[in-house]
Every structure is written in structure tokens, then in C-alpha cells.
Length: 618
Ligand code: ADP
Image 1 (cartoon, rainbow, N blue to C red):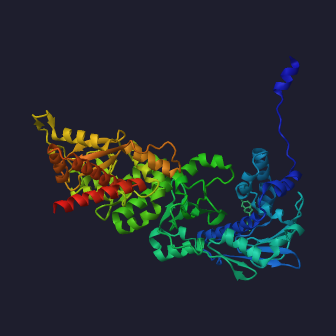
Image 2: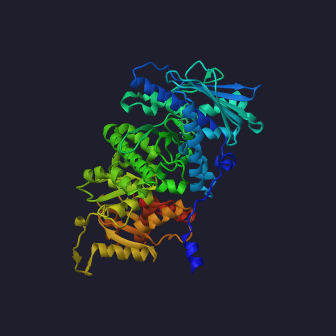
């Protein structure tokens, strides 16, 4: 009993030996050595900002900020100098000697054993940034003169062990010089071109001049920090070129500018896509207070908006956690939600204020918008009324507009065509009766209308040649008069006639009066099987697709030819009737799909017969 109690009662602390920490940092914490540039330049920038802030409060002058990197190839050193607020001996001891180490302990106890890749971003957030310099250096020196009155310049140096040296020195100007004595294996950083590349990558948009060996290398114009109403279109376009050189101009953009309840700034561009599936285009660079963090901020951009390009600056984003955690982070979710809302707002604004441009952009962006709607309910709700389709009236139309325009003729039903050429006959039948048809072109559309129906079942979508809808049929015109001789209506007689002459059991035959009497017959297709076929085609599968049995031949009882056929039949001109019935069927099939070789031959033969009969009668 006493043993188990003893075991239960033991409490203790895991001891951490500080001597172990620098080797851990060097070996394991940083997967990318080059990050030291980002960390040291950000520290220099912070120091400059702090000095400027103090100057404002104390009403004194602060010099224009400036960061200089100098390479001494002979001495194998890189010196990073700033004219920020500097540090005195006490501050060096406090910030450099102590805090960092406690930060390191904190990190090690918290994250030891976690995924190596995820730890590469940890640095600045744990007060370890400065120590990244040891990844590339044998010795690091700090020479600093504080802005404070009567401050004494001091020199700190450390060889990466836990021992440091601190002494007074001479420095004329306020600020800090960090001297890195670059280690043998990190010689690449002593090349001006390489160092310049890194400064450009990480600090291009820091609003302070940065020089490498006397040459200014950064741009200093992070456009996103400006107020949107102060930025011209030209500036947005220029900025895009800086971020993505040699790209065609973007379509339009969204300027993100939020201070509260979270901090988010950035510009997102909708790029010009070269083709519908050019979706790998997207790349949103992530910055943290104008310091570059990563090439692609995938986690904060909604997944369906992979086409977006641009830059976002999220000072509060937790960079020190794994990606799966990041996606569930409430802050990241808020950002993502905000971006979704901004995209929706922008689309609505363009749609309402500049429809002509919107129609042009739509060509490029519609697959993404549709995909987004199918993936995100909030987005669907916000943009559903600005989804547009090309219309048979020549312009583009949204679904609410379509329903309004056609409410007299086609209540709550949207007539669409998936193939303008093949369905030309049906489209013109609709046009004849003043009915508008929308064109679905993209491969995503069959799926998309299915989705729209699932969202709002009060609106039906039917193909222009669909048998489920009566948009081509005029019910009132159909004669219901029964012939006392055989107790049948005209329509019933025609149906029997066509069934017996065509001798095709797989073909459904109906006799109806179409709204237009110009065609003797049309072939309609079931909505379900058409969609099924289209989706199979999209997925490149043709097996199991129903072929013929989903067609219905609709004989137009108001067409004069059909009326004549019935008359000839009553006069027992059997041969003529058979030829004409076949011929009507041929014509109807031709407007639905191309005839096979065999069908075409039969059609030619029948055409010759028809001509022969016609000429005989002349
Ligand atoms: P962090 O930047 O995350 O605070 P660092 O280890 O990079 O962690 O720096 C620790 C502290 O040392 C900074 O917060 C700052 O007070 C001080 N410091 C570092 N570099 C400079 C510099 N160039 N000028 C003035 N102070 C600095």
C-alpha cells in the first residue's frame, strides 16, 4: 500500500538543459535555413517602427528608417544594420539572453515529437527569431546603441553555446548591427545574388528601404495596406504584375481591409484563365505584417476559390500549429468566411452595377462560382441570383429574371438546351411561341441544374426536347371529337396508324397538338435519361447508357401534312400513307440526332420516292 501511495504522490518537473536547446534549434526546429533573413529583417523593422512610435509620443525626430545588409566575403560575415531604437545592456540581457531561452523551453515542452514539417514556422512566435541566426553562423554578434539618453553602446557575442560575452563598445549612431559569422556549410548566403533574392522574397513589401551591399532591393509598396478608395485600377494592375510577373491582366479584384473583430488585409485577384480547367492558377501569398510567410495561403482561402491569386496579410494567424489544426482554428475559419462573403458581395456589386463586364468575366469564373455554390451553402445563398446563362434572346439571364420574363408562358419552369446546333429545331419551336431558352455549355452545368433543383424544388429545369414538359404542346387545340364510324378520336387514329406503319416496339408514339404547326413531328427525350447520358459522357463512361427506348415520337396533330396523311389513310391509299409516315419519322429523328449510315440510305430512298410521287402528280 505504501508503495502505491508513494507512486501516486510523486510530482516533479521535467528538467530541460539549456545546453541542449541550441543544437535542437539548429538541427530540428528549422527546416529552412534561409528563414534567418526573414527573422532578422523583421526584428530590424520592428525596432525602426518602435523608434518612430516613441518619437511621435515624445515629439522628437526619428530618422527615416533604413535596413542595410552587407556582405564581407573575406571575413565571411553578413551584417544586418538598422537605425531602430537599439538596445542597452539590460535589454540585451532581458530580450536576447533570457526570453528567448524560456521561449525555446516552452516550445520544446509543448511540441517535442510533433511533426517536423509543421515546426518550421515556429520561430518569431516563440521569441526565437533571433536565434535562427545560429542556423547559418558559427558566431553571432550584436552591436547596439540605444536611443535612450546617455546610452552606452554594447557588444554581445555568442558562439551558439549557452555562454555569451557582453562588453561596452563604440557605436556612433542609434540602432543595431547584427554580425553573422557564416559557417562553412552555409557559404551560399555570402553571395549577393542569393541574399538579395531572399530579402526580396521575405521583405519585398516592408515599407522601409532595404539595401544589400548598397543597392535598394525592396519595393516598399504593399498596396493592401492602403485604403481601397485611395487605390487606382492602374495601381491594382501594377501590383498584380509585381506579384505575378508576365501574367495576363486579372479580370477584377477584391481588396480586403478588416481591422475588427480580426485583422485581415489583402488583395485577391480573379485571374484570366486560359481554359476552363486552368484551375491550378491560384496562388495567394501569405504575409504577416508585410513580411512574407508562405507562397500559398491555401488554408485560409476557401477551397473552391483555388483560382484566386494575390496577397493576404494576417498578423494574427497562428503559424505555429499543424495544418489540420489550422483549418479548424476559429480565426482561420473567420477569415475564410469573410473572404467568401467578400467574393459574394463583389459578384453582386458587379452584377448590379456593371452587367456588361460581369457577363465577360462570367465566362472565366463561372465554373468556380458554381462549384463554390455546390460546396458552400452560405455562398449559394448569397450569389444564387447572379448566376447567369446565355439566352436564346441574345443576352444573358439569371434564373429569377428568366422566370419573370417567361411567367406567362412557362410558370416556374426553365427551358434549357445543352446543344445549340443539335437542338436547333426545338429551340426555334420555342422561339416561335415566344419562349426563351437558356444555353448550358459547360460540363459542370448538367450537374449544376440538378443541384439547383435540389435547393429549390419549386423551379423545374427541362431540356428543350424534353418529354416531361408540355412546353411544346398545346393541350387546348387537341380535338376530342369521336368519329362515330369507328368510335375513335383523330389522335387515336393517328397513333394506331404510326404504330402499325413504323413497327418499332421500342419507340413510344404520342399524338399531340404542338404549339407550332410547322413540323409534322418531333422526337422528345426523357429528362432523366438525357441527364444521365450527359453525366456519363462527362465522366467518360458510356456503358449502360440507354440508347433508344427513352425517345418519344410526338406526332403533331395540327400539322397540315399529318392531317393529309390521315385523310389519305381514310381513302385507303396504303402505300402512300406508309411512305409518308416513315418520312415524317425520318425528319423528326434528323432534328434530334444524326442518322446512321443505314438510316441515311433508307431516308434517301424514301426521299426519291416522295419526289417521284410528287412529280407524277404535277
Ligand atoms: P521576437 O522578435 O519574436 O520577439 P526575437 O528572438 O527575434 O523574438 O527577438 C527578441 C527581442 O529582442 C525582440 O522582441 C526585441 O525586443 C529584441 N531585438 C531583436 N532584434 C532587435 C533589433 N534589431 N533592434 C532592437 N531590438 C531587437
